[in-house]
Length: 189
Image (tube, rainbow, N blue to C red):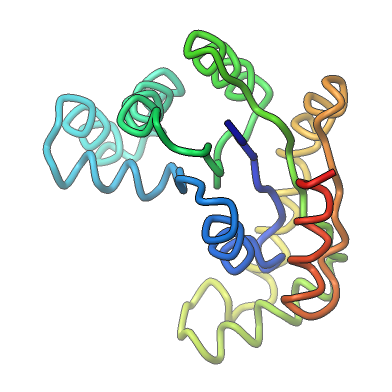
C-alpha cells in the first residue's frame, strides 16, 4: 500500500499534482476538508459533532478528524493506498495518524513537499485569484499571511517526517508535467 502525505504552501500546485498522482497510482484522495463536509452533509454522528463545534467557531479536535479518516481508510482497504491532503498539519496529528495506520498494518511511505519560494507563490496566487474569483487569492497581504502561517505551522512536520527518513522536498518550479515527473521519480525510487 502506497500512502503519501502531499504538502506544500498555498499556490504550490498540490491540487493539480494530487489529481495526477491519484490517476497514475490509483490512490484514494483523503482531503480532510472534503471528509468533514461529507460527514456534516450526511449528518453522521461524527459530522453532527463536528458541525456543532464549527458552528461555535471552534476547531474540530484531532480525535474527531482521525476518526473520520479512519472510517474512510476502513472503507477503502482494498485500494492501492492513500494520498493525504491537508492532514496532518501538526506533529501531534502526524503521530495520531501513524498510530491509526499502524493499527491497520500500514503506514506513511513518504511526505512529498512541493517547495516554491514565497514571491513565486504570491505571483501564482494573484494570477489564480484573477481566474477563480477567490477573494483570498486576490489580496497580497492576505496571501503573505497565509504563507507565513503555513511556514510557521508546518516546520515541525518537516522535522517529524525527516526524523523518520520520509520527508522529500520536491522543487515545485517548472511545468506541471516536469514537476509531476519529479514526484513520480521520487515515488518510484
